[in-house]
Image (cartoon, rainbow, N blue to C red; front, side, top):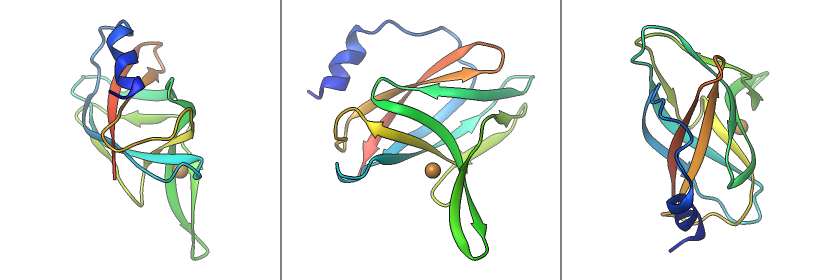
Length: 136
Ligand SMILES: [Cu+2]
């Protein structure tokens, strides 16, 4: 059993807030020599107020950011999105070629099938925990 799964069994839930509905959350696996991973998911806000993601963290990665992919002067590049606001009723896709999570410096090489926990922090100070599965 991968060590991260064992860790999950012993960690208490971060909060009881289930603010956003998050589905299909996954991390694209890459060779150990590559220092970053991209993460994708579908985020829906069922609340009656907007929610802004202002920080992300994980025990499995040195840092986690929301990024957007841009085409600039014919070149593909990406930039950090310091706060990602999801309006009431809105669904936002994090998908290849667009918005994504950038998971930097894995503590250990990632392997398909592993589950990593990410904590999302909102502008109102509340938090939500989510699990992301590593896929090929
Ligand atoms: Cu990125």
